[in-house]
Length: 173
Image (cartoon, rainbow, N blue to C red):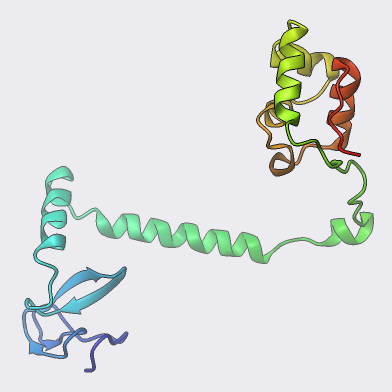
């Protein structure tokens, strides 16, 4: 079999070819090579790396091999994610449409986070107190103070409320 094949080279105790070098061997074993699980001969094995991991895994599990259940569990989780992604429902968007302008975040001045933090502290308020007073999510307020308003999806209404309450300019016009 050619080097770096992706096919099965046999393995176990029944003989076959090394999937890296093609050598016929009855002593093939499963090894992780650059992220791929291959059946390799002792010469191509990664210096006992998998053997030591396997021994530790068996010792921790009381002699049971725990790699298969976790591998099956991960495969089931991936299949569930693919199923959920495939059954997406677009009726919501078809019926209600999209409104990207609803609460658009305006262009903000470069140091908007520092301005909000300073003005809030000068007013003697905590982030929780200010968020409750303005009836906004505290996570949004913290995102603004951290300079992450865009990444956090903070709406323009939050910025306008902060400008009005704290008497500061945050919008770059």
